[in-house]
Structure formats: structure tokens, C-alpha cells
Length: 323
Image (cartoon, rainbow, N blue to C red; front, side, top):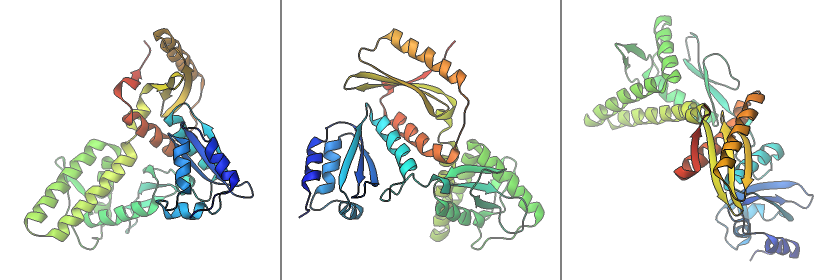
């Protein structure tokens, strides 16, 4: 049976059944965990049950001496505030989002006799990303080596599968490089390569070469991972978006441009003229600010925005423009 102090019991009773973020503090006042929920009371109480779902929770509750919370108007704001605070405070029990400077890029290398692709930590020439997991990217690179050299002829990518990576002379390496740059710079070329790989996989399976077919499958999955990392936010970054999200106190408007929330405002009784005025004000803000990006940090915020936007009902999401 979990022993809960009177102090914690009082905090649990005070928690509202509202959307927001919560902070777990230790006896020294350090924030050791930050989370978010659509119902703060229900979520936080779930940490203090006899058999919590996660092993991490069993360890975390031993250190909790106090609980703080912030109520937000929308789930989107709770998600973004959680991300912002985790990056700033870096609580010891949070695993995700706090180490964004360790995110990496995929680089297409110049001729070096050994590696056509590498993983680097900073944006350089011929780099793509960023990606969160270095280890995943390294595994994808290892898998891709089995089909190098990759050469394009008559609009089709040609290659042979090798159990061991095949060495490339400078001419083959540079043709391979040209193909990779094309594939990573245009999702339609990536689709062409994936289509060829799928045909190769089906042929291998038909010939009972199941191990080879599995290798092709792994390469295809790796390319989807890369493609997602490069192009997932293309629409989000290229459009101005108005979100109209209902709240307990009316509706909240959000203006999103270049993958960032530039303006937001709560209306108790939203009218069409309010929306028109909000959009005009938002475009004025857009015109007055300069875009300063931290690619590695921004990927988490954009992931939140993207995931939330595609989950919202269509009537809450509007592509907008002036003129």
C-alpha cells in the first residue's frame, strides 16, 4: 500500500478536473517531473495507486514531496507548455524532449572511399533533418550500404543487393551521391526508389529468398523514416493556419505561420468579425517579426503542432490568406 503524506493528499484534493500541466517536486523543491493531461485530477491521482502501470512511476512517487499545476485553455497549450518547461528545466524523470541538442542530421558525404552517408550534429552542406535518434539513423545507413552503388538510369534507380557493402570507386561513389541528393531533396524521387525496392522485395519473396526480402523491407522502412523526418512538416511550414478551438469559456483562436504560433486569443462570444480582425492583426505580427530558428528545439514543438492539427476536426482548422 502506497503511503501518501497529508500534504500530498491535500494537493490531490485541490487538483481541478481541467486541462493543464503538473509538476512533481522533491523535498528540496526541485522539479523532478513535468507532465500534461486533459484532466489534471485524474492523471495525477493515477501516480498514487497501489500498482502503477509504469516502473518509472514506482520510483518517481518515492521522491514526490509537492505538486504544482498550471491550468490551460486547450490541450494544445498544455502540450506546448509541457515541452517548453521540460526543455528549460530538464527534470530528472523526464526522458523525452529535454536533450534536443543531441538530435542529429543525415549527411551525404563527398568521396572518401568508405561512407556515402554519415551522421553529424550540426547543419552542414548536403545535410537533412534533424532526427531525434542517432542510433536509428546509423542502423538505416548500415542497411542502405547493402544497395550501394545506387545509380539512376533512364529515370529508374538501379542497384544490386550485397550481403556485405560493395566498395565504390570515385566514379561510382559520385553517381551514388548524385542519386542520394536527388532522393533526399524531393519526396517524389524517394517514392520512385521505394517502389523499386518493393518490387525487389516481392521478387525475393517469390523466389523464397526470405532473408533478402526482409532486408529490403528494413531498407524501405528506413527510407520512410528519413522521408518522414525531412518532409513531415512541409505543409505546416508552407501555410498560414487558423485554429478555432472550443474551450470552457468560449473559443480560442490560434494563428500559425512557418510552423509557429504567432498569435492566440480567447473569445467568450466569437463572431465572424472577431475572426477577421484577429487574422488581420496576426498578419501584421507576421510582417513585423524576423524568423529565428533553433531547428533542433523546434522539431518537438512542430511535432506537437502537426499532431494536434491533424487530430482536430476539420471545422477547427482553416487554411487562410489575405488578398
